Length: 167
Image (cartoon, rainbow, N blue to C red; front, side):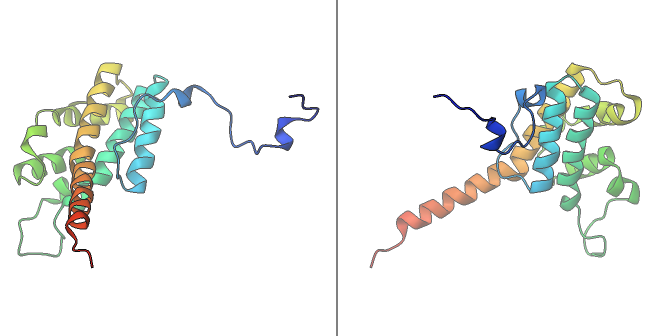
């Protein structure tokens, strides 16, 4: 086919394709929009070797995901975290593990947040290995909090639909 016009006349150019399109890590399914956006940005940074930026974005995913797990601060009938635990991600995760709100199986892997989580944002010293740890923990935690429950919910809906009496 021979075209004597620019493809820009036929297509709308959104952006150029570059290194960020080589993202090797897709976000887990069924994430809230703000968490998915932060994850995608972290994965894009990771794919081009910007490990400090990636670690910071994955840390933001964890911040977004863990904050709603805390009890309502006005509910005095339940155990409350301290102000420090409420607003510091590492302390918050420790409190959530201690209170069995997060799965204990992830506790050892969570140490990467305490040890490396702030380094990307404050010291700028994350290596690929440390970014790998943060990526692994973030992916697994998000899958446990969002993907697995939603998949189970959808499976239950399908099961109920199959068992629905026909008229």
